[in-house]
Image (cartoon, rainbow, N blue to C red; front, side, top):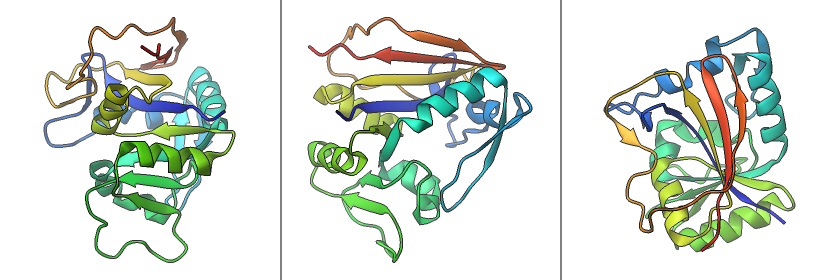
Length: 198
């Protein structure tokens, strides 16, 4: 059965972006932490250069993914991933469909009728694979609705001090998670926590 899995890089002090929406500090490990090349695919492909432990982590995690769910802000910052996300069909939670979308040949879909509908559609598209979730606000909404199964956080070796926090605005805290799996990379620690359902 498909799982809904949060996937984010963040600073050690809990920020996923700086005050100006910059993400370079929390994403540096993707491009400068080793010599193993990891191509992303999709319409706007990149090649990561990571350490062997990070490459093994990414290979395992990405092989599990069949669709992505994200918010409008992440979609805008990523410029729509060129129309095709590397993880498969993308479902964007939004109040309104942006001008010029949907586009021919694109696998980006817009969901305007709420988080539950977005999860249903993304799970249907993912089949037996998992739905990867981007975006702090979307992750917070899923946690608050009890719809998130796992949290994967890549903790970058940096302290930002301010910006956009990953775990603000949670409705039910403390939220106790299951025991993590831990992989130490170069400049990053990969953590996977199962979410315990209430």
